[in-house]
Length: 316
Image 1: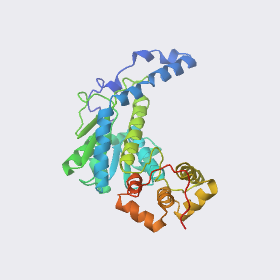
Image 2: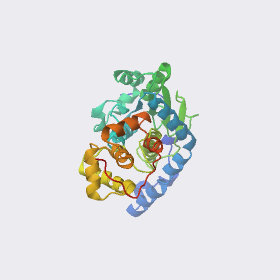
Image 3: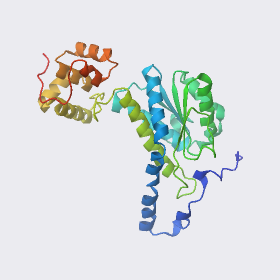
Image 4: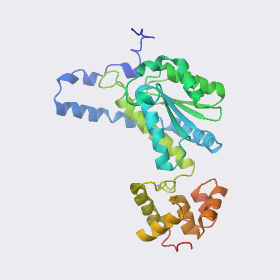
């Protein structure tokens, strides 16, 4: 039998929610209505963390521009949410898989089968980071809904020892569960309707915060133009269609012309936009982007170009 490490009853995420004391006696309609009402709280929790999230986005982007990487570390639901956000960065932003990585206690097998017991090993957090060559140039977001997970604490301590950027994300006040970090993101969603089940409101708020964090960082890295994901790579039919819509909207091309330009650009929307708007071939477009840190807006401004344009002539 595993012995409890401490009385966690004082933690906000472990307290009983008075709104659901008769949860098992509610009609199905009343039960669902109660969940819908409570699920307004994650939005409020994220709103309360705007300042910390903003600080984190700018600090992470600075490190990534200098060659660092972003790691999410967690156990159970928290870790799985980190893995999910990391996995969605390459198809959305055409980022290399190693740029944003999710590290889950128990490894890939824990995605499908519960292995929450592994969260009690503080040394495992640091060990898993070492296995990925985590360095002082990198960023770590340690995610622990209840703020007490030894696995996450160990990872955050290791990050600070190396001089890496250490960011904590938890759903309890810092005075209830302090975490070693440089930036402290607290998403205060309150007690769960199902007592202690942090896959509910805490999980929702965490997913929202990670969406904001990774998207904000990618915007700062120049992977977005306006609200278009211009670093997307046309690797399947859905993304080809999205890519052609971007070229239509920003360059004024019809579908056939968009498809032709996308082919000349090797499937890269960003390259295609530079080629079409500046009348450059693929190599010239790449050189212009490289000279401006792959930032499309800055590259176009250097040529006096802004998008959208009425229509363009395809480069020969």
